[in-house]
View 1: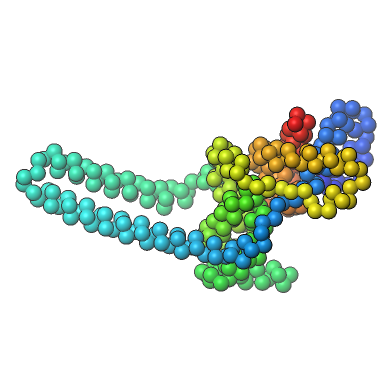
View 2: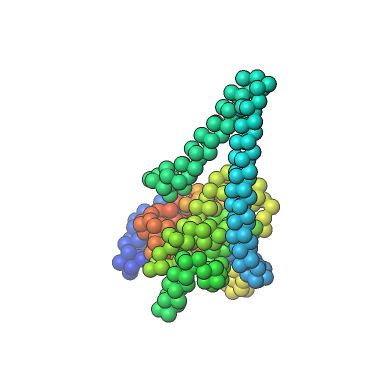
Amino acid sequence: MMGALDGETSPQQEQELSRLLENDPVLEAEWEQLQRVKEVTSGMVFNKPPEEIWDTYWTGVYRRFERGIGWILVSVGAILLLSYGAWEGLGELLDDTTTPAIVKYGALAVIVGLIVLLVSVVREKLFIRRSDPYKDIIR
Amino acid sequence: VSETVAERILVERARSGDLEAFGELVSRHMRRAYFAALGLAGSHDDALDMSQEAFARAFRARKSLDPERPFYPWLYQILRRLCFNVHRDRRTRQARLAEAAPWLVEEAGRRAAAEDPARQAENAELREQLDAAIDRLPARERETLVLREFEGLRYREIAELLGIPIGTVMSRLYSARKALAEILREG
């Protein structure tokens, strides 16, 4: 029926459909409903946007490249600075004899935990996702 | 043939990071990508946003471009995943659509060409319900219907674009039209 509605059937298939419709009133009623839907949808077109959007379309795409590069630089810079700060801070904290041991162990655990999380995320992005057989499945 | 060769050259240049060549590919395919996104997303703002984002992601993934294959089907895979993922949250989507202008309109000149005014009026009323009815379809059925009805692709072209058999194209169209028939009948 779909092929007949969309003009994608051969003359033999058309004849076969006509024969089936003649002998089956339920099928014929369904056919009429589907034809009605086709008639209504055939009269519709996409609502066209203003022509001016095409003049600035490329600019919009290009802006996304720039922002992407910007975010990468900001992220890399932030990670470097935070890592350096954490390293220096931890060194000072561990060297300081007045700091209670529990604070030293707590700070050490936070830093090691962050490193483990970072390595885990990077490993997932770089290795696991590459070999994931379901990565193309759209959820 | 010359168009195909020209596009292949552009794809090869874009693969090597040539932004000018990629810009030319964008110019060639931006309208089609926009309308494909409009069919999937249902609003102008989302269609513009997602089609531009799809081009940006395509440029980032340019190394996986195959110059021997047409550019658009490859881009379309990025675009459809983007649209499906963004609109996974149905409530957010409904809220956005409620604020958006209709994405489908009556074809210009059709009203004037009608022979039966009563039938024409009835069709106009049904078309008003159509926007919402199509939005309620499952994503894959909606996509197939849009490609057939509003982009005017043949079954073979839809099958190639989506990477599915022609039989699946027909079954998705059947499910979509059957659901629309029910919705329009109830409305």
